[in-house]
Length: 424
Image (cartoon, rainbow, N blue to C red; front, side, top):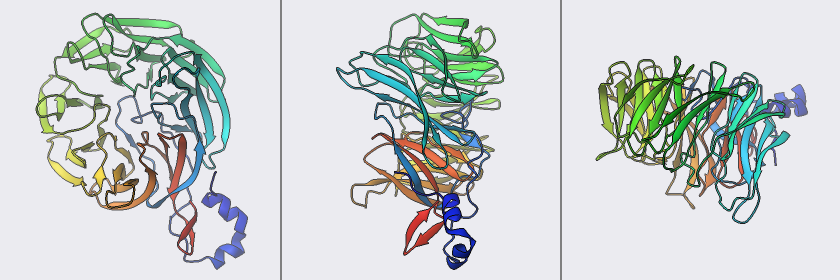
């Protein structure tokens, strides 16, 4: 059920009623819902940073709507005041139906729903956390292939790209750049493995790069005409491909353990080992500039904004200097920061999810922190016993999905009566 936003509330009560509620306004300017959060990690480089001004203060669920509860929980993306979300209905011995839905960013009203794939599969996982919105199109990856739609819901094409029954990685948005959409043959598999590029407009093949000695490609990244392919199994490494041709440019032999973030000439790379760590690597020389211990989940990304790097590990949200790795601040472990969360930075605010073990049922809260100092700028409860998707942030609002079939829109609480928030 959707709750009224601040804009709707202002319209309903009118100017005279507004004057009678003076002193109840606490959330600042009304959200405009403008801006774009195009994919998990915000951009192809996976920086996780947007210049938008996200919500702070009392973070309140302005609306919630039901979506299919298929695993994994897919991260919403936002463009043109519309939230796009991939979700799957299905289960063991049931037909899977994967759909992309569009919702009003302001109200949560479902605007359209398009089925992109159906199958008689007997597994619970059937899609990747993979939605991308770019150049007036939406791209989504299910196990059968890559799908492209217009932003009005019209299905344009499907290009078959198989995923094995072990669907790693769960987070696998395609790269959409230079008129191409680039993805890989994901899953725990034996060779051959390939990275595949198709024409973004037509879905026709453009190039394919094979890797006969490597078994598990992970989440792709890209910047400055280069696609970065991390491999977690077999010959662990990072391979750099020319985005126009698929030709290999160089490779590094490293125990990679997650998605790569590109920050100029620096690659931020999670590494396996004893101990596990986060490393900054000079992409020109391949040298490790700095390396810090970090116990985290493999799917977790690293975020960079300006001169600071953010990541979640060891029950903390950590901020370090990009150039030296020096610790600037940390948040946690009370509350306990989720080690499977990827920070999102909007303007001067960084968002993280943390549990409050001292409260009944140990609920998850979304925290808004000052990106420079780690000072708490706001928080709000989002769930109990379910891990949320990645966050999307536009002007004045944030969006995430829960692993129990809910999509949420969050805003700063604007009006309260008797201590109860009535609108965002």
